[in-house]
Amino acid sequence: MKSRIFFIILVLFFVFACSVHAPVKTAQEEFNAEGSFEKANKLIDDKEYEKARALLLEVKNRDLTKKYAPLAQLRIADAYVKEGEPELAVAEYRRFLEIYPNHRHAAYAQYQIAMIYFNQIESPENGYGGAHKALEEFEKLKKDFPRNPYKDLIELRIEKCRNTMADHEFLVGEFYLQNGSYKAAISRFETLLRKFPDYKKEEPLLLNLGIAYKKAGDPEKAELYLNRLIEKYPNSRLAADAKKELSSLKKAAKK
Image (cartoon, rainbow, N blue to C red):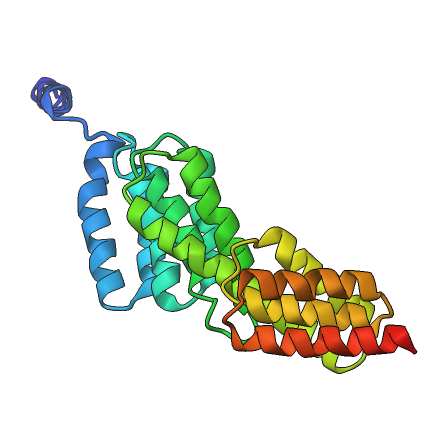
């Protein structure tokens, strides 16, 4: 009996000794954030976007060092871009900027938002809206991140956004003019002239404004814009058209 009790005590002592000296695994040691992040990137390359995002979300929530959590949030957004889900991507990039506004990749997130809208410019349905939103986001990038690495690209893309928006206003104004909605046409053309004073199609714009005012029964304003066209672009083919419109105005005034 005594030997059995001694044996039990010996076993308990051995178990206790092992438990004291055995290394205790922490949650961080059990979860390899770096390895999981690399695995998620491989899944993105393999177009396994849903699996990648699930793993990236785990990295974001379990990375106690916080080294890979911000990168995981970015890659979640990137995965939506690659999958062709732009609105979901924008939401995730915005979430990154809310959580990590001073992160070294914050300018990248803002640039990606702008580029998502910029890439919609060629779409007939979203051209104007995409240009308008992209312009706002590029301006925000310049304001919030003046040292961003995309400076050379931004100015070219801002110019394209502005040209797209201006062309849209011009086409709408032309539509109104051709369909006899002269006041609506004047409103569009005047807005275009005010918002985009460096518009590349200023010659036809001035001519259309002169014609629209003429049709609307405002000869003084019509003469103003027709004369501006002739003075500013004397060698233009449209200057000759403007002179014809002025001539018809003078004849109508004599009657």
